[in-house]
Length: 303
Length: 156
Image 1 (cartoon, rainbow over the protein chains, first blue to last red):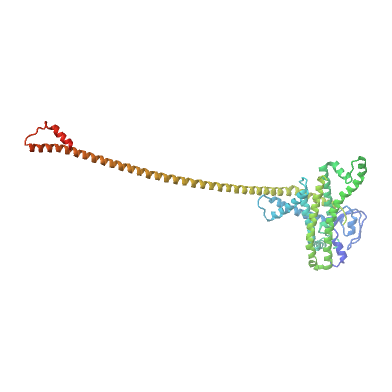
Image 2: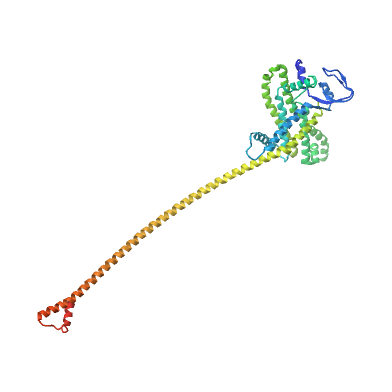
């Protein structure tokens, strides 16, 4: 994005490559192209932030999904290789690495989750490693991959530089983090129902935190409890997802600001922040995993 | 920062990866780790057992050694006693043999002395007879003087 103002530079770096449906009669005003009115609703790439917004819910962040999927596949392949090599004998270097991670996760799960489940440990493994890898993309200098993408798209596919949005850190996209945290919430509900039955689940929502032995008072308290517990239930995934998103977004924002201010000097300027950020990305992945385990543990335990 | 279908796409990725890890990653690795844990525990207990066995063997060896020493001492003692006994027996045998020899010699000597005496007695009788004959110039009747002669011989 040479020649653009810092504001535009930052804004461009924060935009996602969005593929979605534009409605019939929509007027496309893309910079560097002729204004165009759509005769029918069309699936296409958004050429600026306004279009991405106007696509509404029927849109995909292609970059987020591609990077998160790609990183997830890499992670799965690595662990799969480890699983194929796993023996009770003396582990090699690579196996040692895999086993260290597995044992670390296993310890966390054993410490916090007191039920029996075949799902929680692999779930925690995926969350920790996947979120870590997604966060790790934050440490790649901000223009390397988006710049390459922009160059390829403008040179070979006739895109304008403005259209070539490309965000490589999936965890700076709230869709990604909220998707994971709400998946966790669904699992929490599933675990609660499995452990306590549907009635038990409704009971946890309706009969706490205000309790009474008097049936009439109990009935009066149900709406209050329902309101409080529903908010509590929703607050968990929202906070879980937004915490990760907020931390990563803020970190990425600092990198982009440094790049906007310093240009090539960013490699020196961003170095201390990158070092500090290594801690943040690991910690955030760890927190996400631990909270998931804790929520699931709370779901299967009696209070 | 729009919320859109990405949220569903990501949930699908999430489910896929969790399913994959649950089916193909976690079970083999955790099984291997469990097996190794068991193997190590077995190895440690085997080492403990071996140590105990070694201790027992050492004790047994010490006991055997002690027993052997005692037995050896006993055997030496016995041998000494037997040797003394043999020496004593030999001494005894030698003494009796000596005594026997001495007695035999003594009896032989006695016998010869008696023989000589007997001979002498006979010769004395003859000699005395012949002497008396010469002295008397006559013949002495042997039969008549037999009693006297015998008396004489007995006095010798």
